Amino acid sequence: MNDILRGRLKSSMNKDMARFVSSMNIDGWIFTPDILVNKAHVMMLCEQNIIVKEDCLSILKALDSIKKGGFSSLDTTHEDVHVAIESKVIELAGEVGSRMHTAKSRNDEVATCIRIALRGELLEIMRELIALRNSLLNLADKHINTIMPGFTHLQHAQPTTLAHHLIAHADALKRDFDRIVDAYTRVNLCPLGAGAFASTGFPINRERTAQLLGFDGLIENSMDAVSTRDFAIECISAFANTMVDLSRMAEEFILWNTPEFDFIELDDRYSSVSSIMPQKKNPDALELIRARTGSVYGALQSVLSICKALPYSYNRDLQEATPHLIRATSTLHSSLRVMSGIVDTMQVKSDRMAAAAHVGFITATELADTIVRDAGISFRTAHQIVGTLARNGQKPTLDQIDSIANRIIGKKLSELGLTQASLDKALDPEQNIQIRCIRGGPAPKETLRMAKDRMKQVDSDTKFLDQKVNQIKAALKQMDAPVRER
Ligand code: ARG
Image (tube, rainbow, N blue to C red; front, top):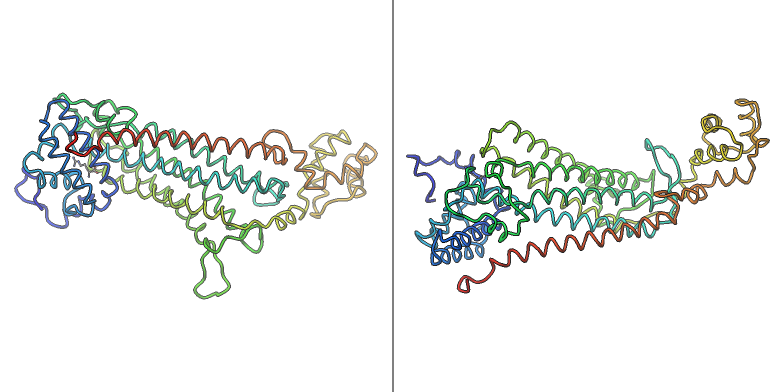
């Protein structure tokens, strides 16, 4: 390796030191962005008459050929992808290649590359989130009338429907989507031109490189531009929040897939086996989503800790943040994709869910409400009467209600207006759901309205995403023309 940077130093690094400081093991992530950044930069240098057209064309030609060769064609003994690419440009274009780094530092270069790579990941994550929301809503649409127990403290609480439950998860993912869209607005800003931190005395045009690279604006202050990784922290934080939601869904599906619940059966494609117990069909993918949520928190904690108390501007510590960002990003991608597949293929056992909604005294809340309405007593007193009745865990008869009420308030509720007909209605899980028809409730009419409304959101989010993707494609296309036509 011919080191182009070490003029200041008399000796070269030994192998241990070189490996210790290198970021080449993860720089494949920013290989394409670095080619783009270099192309935009030299095109701008040429437009600003900082380098001559002929040199610009030679450098662009070299960059195009390096792009074709791919990251694997680079000499990995270099300190990072920026040096590896610049060295190769000099090798291919000769001395004129040395002009590429005019008015640029690796500090603004790497910050720009990370933002380009990350915005692409964010757009993909948005797409994956839309797909998962779509999967949940499609399943919800089929199960508007599928009754199941709803839980608090993992105890049977009140009847609900599978649609109501699934839309709740889809709504959480919509908020995750919105958080990522919001983070995107702060990621897609261009630090290029900040130089090492003090910008440059060359008359560069920062708006032009930002525009060529498809950014929506600049990180203006050149010291801020190279110093910050707050955008990475913000993204990993949004990823961690999304993983919380995925892990909660994963945990429920793991429980529902047990013989004890028996609410769903995972498809074989998303199941694993045991090496010793031939009968086993295990939900390993869901367990890994649950576990990797912890790894994403770890990435967030790592980047927060790495960035804490760093004096402005650039420090090499910042290099150490990037692998955590990459790991968190790729974990979220794979978790979202696998979760969509699981939802799309799992078998729902509607009968088992409905049967479970009849177990125990899950309609107790509605009975208390009915007593309030029919017998005119306060909710707290009704709660006490029904709570006492619930001690044996079974649905009560009108006689049992009367005898307990007599003990507690000295009156029979049947004498105050509670009838067998309204008792039967109160104790029927289906009726419980039907009357919870206010906004956001589990009544079929309302969940159907919510499902349709969410599907419309999915459509408009897809349009928004397509527009962002096309905007970037169109910007980058400006740099696509073959060198001879430029
Ligand atoms: N590989 C480095 C990083 O990821 C690039 C910037 C190096 N800059 C420097 N001044 N040493 O941060």
